[in-house]
Length: 114
Length: 110
Image (tube, rainbow over all chains, first blue to last red):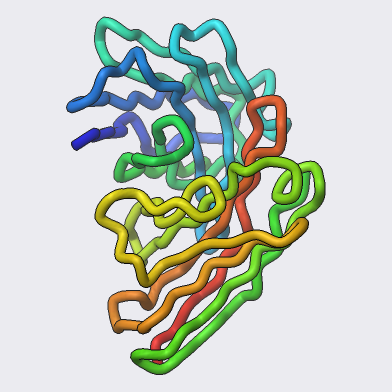
């Protein structure tokens, strides 16, 4: 069964940076586009970013464009989200998900606060 | 783009059916056969229950069904059980690699 495990969340001050990782197992990593989805406390999910199978096509929500960078390392079966210029409104649980959101990780919590 | 619109809550007694709506536009729900539904229990990740409007992933009970009419998609849970009590979200492809999620519906089993 496909598995995704996120890490890298934590408490960061406004304006700071953080890199999230998502390690995949039990599936052919290079066959799937991947997504980052976040969910602020008490809110619905928000599609943040996506990357194609070989990394050449990316998508960013307008709320993070220019501040976040998605990338993937296929030999390491790992997806990344480099987050910069963080704002309090970026506080959320961040999930990685497989193509068409069939599989989700357990999430990693990011808190942006002074 | 705005979130898809769902009713905040829905409820039913065990064994009954409950239907949740998800309203978008012709640029998302009505324009692509890529509407999905997710179940989320407190503190857990969302779980895919329906994809491509009406398809069920393996392991999801056939008590869960999806449909679409125009710009509104629906999820029906038949034969309600206590474990169906959760938040439910819809999502739709909206073009240019963008997906939009719904506002969420809290389902209560009375």
